Image (tube, rainbow, N blue to C red; front, side):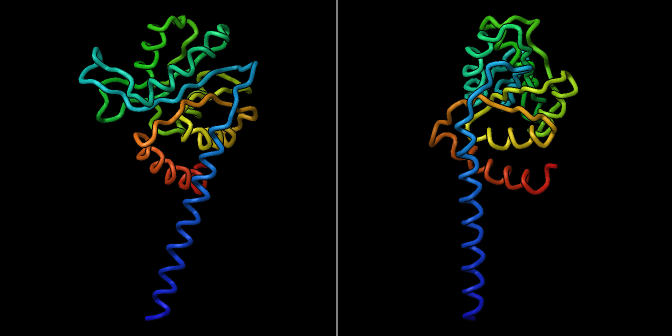
Length: 193
């Protein structure tokens, strides 16, 4: 019985250490700064709210990503902006379509916006966006808790110069997102090659 307690404690301690390391990696993603000369700006999707395509709106997390991107987009009017995100089963429209409409409403020219509307995972956001446009210097726009994994996957996809703009989390509202990101990062480190 004594060995069972020691084994259980060891497993729990190991799991806690892994979660702590993953949390620290996520935290390092918050400190990224965008390059001055990007080839493309990639805004990663998040949940869309509403009951129909006509009433679809970005969630709080998605709107924060869009709002933090707009000043940078306006500073780089010649740089293509890829809005990437498909449609989840509980979403009334694709994340990309909702993002495009939001940017248009904020004065971003339509000719500057490219849609990638099939991705349902971060890796797909990046790989599908590469099929739309060739780029070497990419600025990713996403939430601070999501940046480390996004940059990791972009580098694994062969993009050598990846920087980012992070939308700040709102704790405790985003604690669920942070918790999910711990497991998503663990999965990405092991399986998303």
